[in-house]
Length: 520
Image 1 (tube, rainbow, N blue to C red):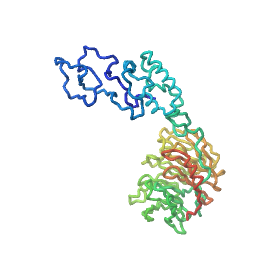
Image 2: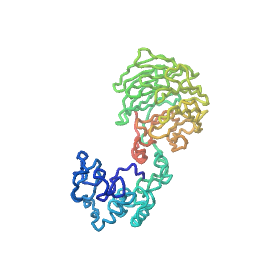
Image 3: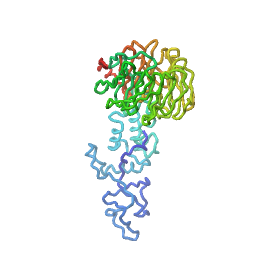
Image 4: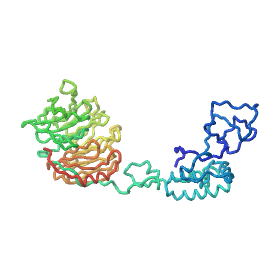
């Protein structure tokens, strides 16, 4: 325990103890240089110092003034704290011995020391406290000892050494194991966080397409889930479970992608005919329609008022919804359909994945990719930027690839590759802990929670009978929703809360609140 960070009252001093030195003042000292413990009502820095030529009063009636105030506990009422009374006159010798010790501390048996020790360590103190206290008591009669020595009565030396594992535990994240200070901190569990293996809610989503290249589910910052079902878009309020039909594209068109703006009030909808519509979800009103793509729009990504769309026509268009033009720039580079699109958290880099097995990174003003990654051997739909480390990008490949790869876009380095054994359909990073979720298709249709950077599996969740093609995360970062061609949306509690990072509440929710209903 570091005594420099504790502002505790000093031990009691004898009535005439000098704070600058442990030795009593010499008779040659002038009154102005003498630092006595006078009552606060009689100490005044503004009062004049008595002149050396003035007649000296008797010691009993003399008042010493100084520019420093040294408190005295001579008049303290220890009865308020259920302590023993102050030492009597026959204990003056022991009090003087304590005052004269170089450490300026009191014996361990004093009421002050006992109270402070109880406040610091509670009813039961660590093993070394008793030995230090006994050593302190035995040394008080033998004479003064150096400050910080094992025999001193300094209460801040009761826990003189901290185990190395305790130091590590103090600065480790919530998932690491470690033993903390006994009696002061609680000990964390040794096992991994428990993640419920079943969804706590299932929504039936009729006509949810089984198409790898589409992105039909997104969760807004206002806790509204948007789902594209056939030619309609539905909104599900996660707070009230109310379902609202946002739009119907008609029999000639279908929904291929949905994407919420970062503030959550505008929803972009990409269609099979190559249109990009922007809707005001609060009023259920369409505010823009842009028709610059020649083929279906399967990927959408927002960057403030800038909306990026990826199409089967191999192009990426930037739309500024404040401008009159349908788009402000076109990005060319992919040789096949663009099926993955994500802006980084700082809105400076755009990552795109295509059916040409390529992963590209673009900056805000580039017409051509600034980084090109060709290691994947199948379509790249799954893309996720880390919210914890700038420039860390994860990508997943399709059936012939099955790998999750990690890239440092700042240094243009390939960091790691993990073979998952199944087609990687989606990736999302937790905002609360350094973990990520992947959803998979052929052949296991599983959901995997990974710890980064070790990429150890925390949980493997199953239940979907088709490829898990759609994934979104709640605004609080605790819940994910997955969608599949089995026409269900399943809600899983996989991450801890931002504050507590505790899984107990998550387990109870997953175990007790299972509900199945329809989204339309």
